[in-house]
Image 1: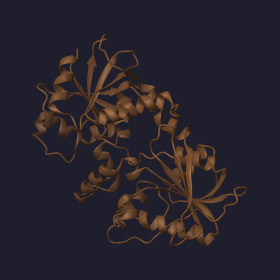
Image 2: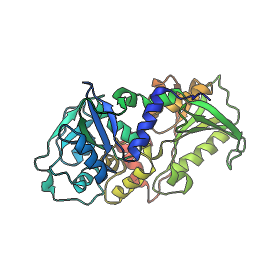
Image 3: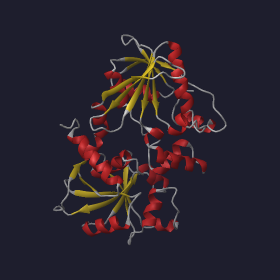
Image 4: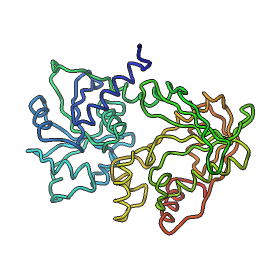
Length: 364
């Protein structure tokens, strides 16, 4: 049977699988030179030895500009997302771990002496490698090895990685639907959407029979294992999920889109790391920056595509986050009204909610 995937999705999926296993991914840079990238988080002695033997120039370490600043490097040019650091010789895996992981045991601060930082061009192979690591849900830091021109191996184009999420969203299709009565919404059904490469799946919880000729009451909800399933008190996600279902049901009809982007898009493991950093004094957004991520890595292209496939062009959006309104509007979905969606705080999440308001612009 012919694959429904696209060449772009196939090549990037292969690269994600390879780098998650600790292997090297080859990417062409803007000058058509080949660079090998390995995840710095799971770098093994054997992989380091192998790539060092092949490299024809000194190895470097790519980290996000956010992570470089937390290490004490001065900010570089405003457009920089990725920074290249020189690596002390001989290379120490402990030193690499300290650079990329704020939870790692810290060596002598003097080990940064003589380490230089330079900007990586936007859209370059180096920039795209950091995006690839984020897609793989690994810490966004890569060992970079320039390779000789005649090196054998499959090479990706940097642009393919940068276009991957948009391509996944573009190829979403409806693959299953079933009636699922819910505690607060008995007249509910679930519709599942999947991209052409069989990757990340998203769900629509359709309550009642929405009239798609009029603005539909909509909630965009990013999955939260700890809050939605376990009832964690560290966030308000569980309250928002169950509250939205009840409110939509009381309104008569509407849709909740359940989006697979845990931890504001950084994944569950990295969210747990962020929690550990929060316990040591960082707020919810600074913890993400310490790990090298942006404070919010989510995208809403899948949500817009799902709404389009459901025939919905106008929505009344239940949200406290202005960025969701902006994202849907840019994707062709008209937000005719923002419907506030606020729940009381508790002793465990009061600071979290305050940070969302003061730094994230959430409207409480």
